[in-house]
Amino acid sequence: MIAYLTGKITFKSPTHIFLETGGIGYMVKISLNTFEKIQHLDHCKLQTSLIVKIENQSVSGYDLYGFFEDIEKDLFEKLISVSGVGAATARMMLSSYKPDEIKNAILTENEALIQSIKGIGPKSAKRIILELKDKVGKVSGEQNLAFSPNNTMKEDALFALLALGFTKQAGEKVLGKLLSDGHSRTVESLIKEALKLL
Image (cartoon, rainbow, N blue to C red; front, top):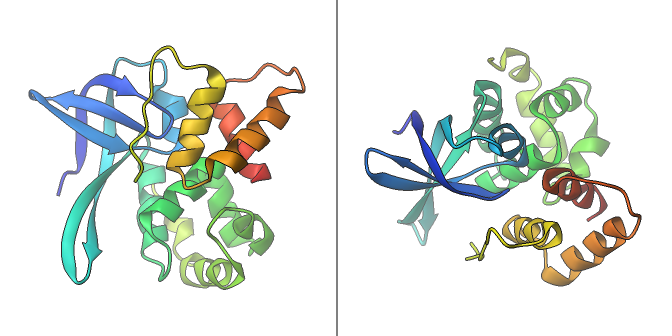
């Protein structure tokens, strides 16, 4: 198990980074919360969670998820312990809301907020609350997408939405709507607003 990685960020996007340490470059999937913390950094330390992918009862690959804060990693691992909640859904939750917001939604049994996240239906929301309500109080402190330094904010946001499982058509529609209002936004704030509308 890889507990954490410390190294140089050689590539960065809102959904994943390449982290070089010891001459090895690791592709680490991240949430928007972590992206916000590391977007201006050249080096970082990420707590990690290694997810083994199983298809047809055999190992088909591995995904490495990284978290800037222990609280986010802890919540991610609690979420994926719930039946029916996979790593992609847990990352979607942590990209839509901050860990404390999810934790509070579980503690206050706010099913509406949890259901507002893509991939979470009424049954899953109830199950998350039921299974984690007594645990979250203890929270401690594939698509190949071409990111480019020359991408516009809209393109970066669209790539992130595609990586999170949305269609290109739906992503372009909601991003176009958001960008037409003339408000100034960062890439991560644009993605968060889009997630709430999709």
